[in-house]
Length: 154
Image (cartoon, rainbow, N blue to C red):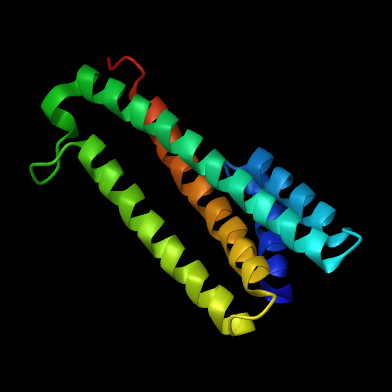
């Protein structure tokens, strides 16, 4: 558990170099709030709530990225196709695979760390915060590339 929190902290410290600074700061604030909970039950509830918020942010960022991909494809047409698939299809495939991976990985971490005991939910939520922060960086980097390619070509 402490290792995962340390990893979140490392991502946050590197945040000025990444396009996720606000999300990382938000995740760290959530972690700090959870750490200062009065009871273990409140701490678990806090982590579960923070994980739900981070997953909602991933969903919103994915939808924004998808919308911009679709706009780029309208602008550039076939130039955005790769191996017969559109950028939209590749992005949807990427998100679907990531969702499956994160679900499985966090289940493994939650079950392994606590063997189904009282810390399972906390470990699972901690994993989700870490993976969501990473996915936000990926989606925002993609969004940045898309926006750069939407500039008028000369």
